Length: 258
Length: 258
DNA sequence: AAGTGGTCTAGACCACAGA
DNA sequence: CTGTGGTCTAGACCACTTC
Image: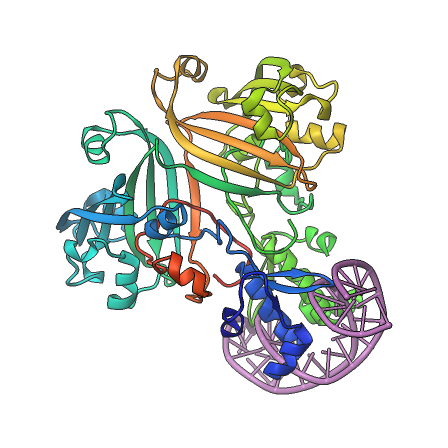
């Protein structure tokens, strides 16, 4: 199915469900579910009564765990990367806790400067349990992709992550590296990433300069007004109480009704 | 279906699909789709081979356009709100552009201080086209919900919004109101919200104090490695190039495969 | 072994788009 | 009017959980 639509241009109509079903030798309902998946991923758009079409590449094609490089390209910049330092040592209490390993276990710490069109955008400090990436050196990450390396050299795939975002100001080292004045506004990101088996792979701390980096987020109205009202809930919460939307901003685009 | 599961406790097993189907007098496939919807909304969880269960109320029950109040309650605080000022006047170029109205059209501007457990958390400046909310006064929003007002008094529902997030530092007025030192790190949110008919309803500018407010975001791996590769794309983009995940952080939880 | 969700089939009727 | 997607039906087999 993916191969089939790969041949089409944006805006082209996909053959009808009935036609594709007989072409693939499956029932229409079965083919329908395949299309549903592709619609959910943003590759196709349905128009009732008319047909199914190849979708415009979305500005935010399901922004899930996008890489720095891909994000920058989408914004129209040429991404690059400089490894500043690479060290190895015991995790310590804080990093150990984040990576769910013993504080004594060895951790590889790599600091990279990320640039867009040659302009420094962020300082990224990456911590990885050493035993997960034997042989990895700092230079391996020069202008390269850590996630690709994980996948290709170590066979590690990532499933999910949790990230916190908070404002900060650039300290001396950061303002030097980012080439911004001392105490400039900046965004601090901290992220932990896990494998499908719930093993923590990395803890990353990134400082992005605030004058050049902005998060853009699409909001969607929640499900109907349908709410489950168990006895317990009615006690704890005072009610839905929707007033002005709070900035906790997540887009969920699953193709179903808003 | 919603009524049916409303009677159950968290963790309870829902009757089997076959049973519910005959109970409602529909085919199993039909009932299945109903359940799919509820799973997508986070009310139910399926366990293959075992059954379908009433889900834990999620920490982030589909974080879509959550209100300040609801967000604060979820974080365990008691939200409140103080209207600082309410003025009316021509939109001007900037606000007019954001609200897609003429710069001469009258706009209601309301400044509110948002608190959690009595502690100032944010300063929120709300701009609404006057003609959409005739009779609305600043006091109406004292400890009240703007979205509820829109819905109930004016019959306006909201469909989607777009929001930008960037770091900033508190200026004099902001640091006074937020009770933080001058030039403390803060988050600046700017949001425009639309109705289902694509009419802009509000433009909101919020400054959140950085020491007490943090965004937490769950990341998900994208769709398989399947990518559409049209000729045009191969030219423009240098390739997928996944390296370290960039902080553009959106959770999409639609219950389908990651 | 029985029951569950997951998937598929081969039909059917509907509302709507488009010529 | 024809073709399209949207929805529903009444079965079927599978892999899995649970006892």
